[in-house]
Structure formats: C-alpha cells, structure tokens
Length: 123
Image (cartoon, rainbow, N blue to C red; front, side, top):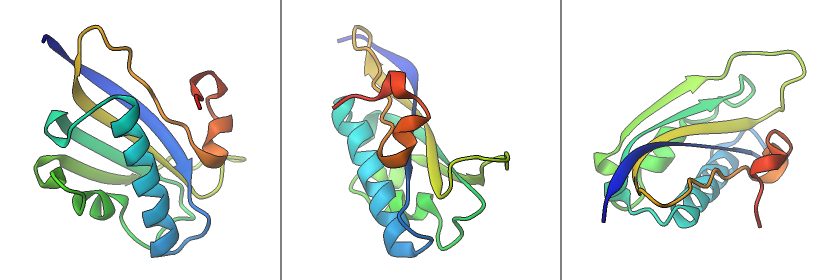
C-alpha cells in the first residue's frame, strides 16, 4: 500500500470555556478525524490546534496527548487570529498524516463549526 503525506483540516466548537467542555470537543473532533480517514495514531506526524481567544481553560494538545498512541505525535497549540464576527469558542486543527494514496482526505467540521465549511460537512 502506497501512502502519501497529506494535510487534514477540521474544526468544532466547545460548549463552554471549561476544561471538561474543551476536552469533550477535542476528543470528538480527533475521533472524527481518525475514523473518517481510517487513521491509526502511527500515521500522524503532527497536529496543530488553534483556538479562539475566548477559550483559555486548557490546552487542546494536552487533551490529545492523553489519547492512546498519541505520545509520538508532534502537537502544538496556538491562538487563532482574532477576526471580528468569528465563530465563538472555536477549536480548529491542522494535521499532517500518511494516508493511502487513493484515499480522499475527509475534513471533519462539527457542531457550530459545520457552518464554516458547509462543503466539507458529511454525516
């Protein structure tokens, strides 16, 4: 099986600025990314999480780092550029992973973030 290095995007929203709400959103987003792309953690090279300024209760990367097999994934958090009217409590990710060459990347946009990219929303 031939694999290619691919970039995957995704986003979701947290219900509140709490560690529990952010953890729930991050876990749901990462699970969707892994399932939709049929990825194992060993296929992930790096994941960058960005959050809007209204989310400061915890680091999304710290949540992801606890997942099985993710201790070898390079993780980074940053704050999303502040733009007037941006979606509140939004968590975005950019992942680099080895995907099967013939597989089309699936980019999960969940919860309120589905409105950011309606062309990418799937059931």
